Image (cartoon, rainbow, N blue to C red; front, top):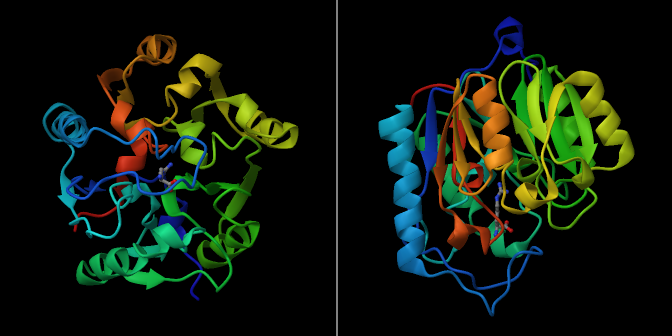
Length: 280
Ligand code: ARG
């Protein structure tokens, strides 16, 4: 595997987003603490919420969005953040899902990446990795979560592929099972995060490497950290006025989108989006 050379070390810019319209979205199993078969999403409302997110991104933020069709047997495929981790140079590390319920998505995402000219890199067998749900490229670093959905062996592998240092952050609360549910990179060295989702050592690592905005428990539960950041635009789940205030104070333009029907499955704005570094 070729380690990345110079361009990888440059700040990453999001060129496009990959999304999946919720044509087969549903809640048919329970694989995280948010999912209850007794509380299934209202599909019409989910569709409306997804469209509002899509319109906010394309029309207000002005970022192009490309789509993948949802497979009928993959009710969680709308959460495209879990497709993989795109790297500079049209490469992608494909996810290897923890749960069989989501493993069915892998061939669909793989096919999409291949058809769009990506070199697809796979994790070794038995090494779970859930893509951008658990890993972000931030400047010269990869910041990655582990324990719930991603195994720590995936972090080592990410470093090998990229030649970049991976900051490994342990997630300790089942409600914040993916890094993107509790950690929000905002550009440069600024991040918002929910400290209680991490063990003490991860909190220390975050505080040492970043300028931080702490998120309150109430807003963390409303998925405040699960926001989409494009330059100085932030699209966040509705009902998080404190984080909104902090962001506006720092010059961000903030848009709110209701996400109730996706939160029932344990996801919100960011989970519904994959950051692509090059236009397809
Ligand atoms: N129900 C999905 C799961 O448990 C939700 C995924 C949310 N995605 C994310 N990037 N946090 O896998």
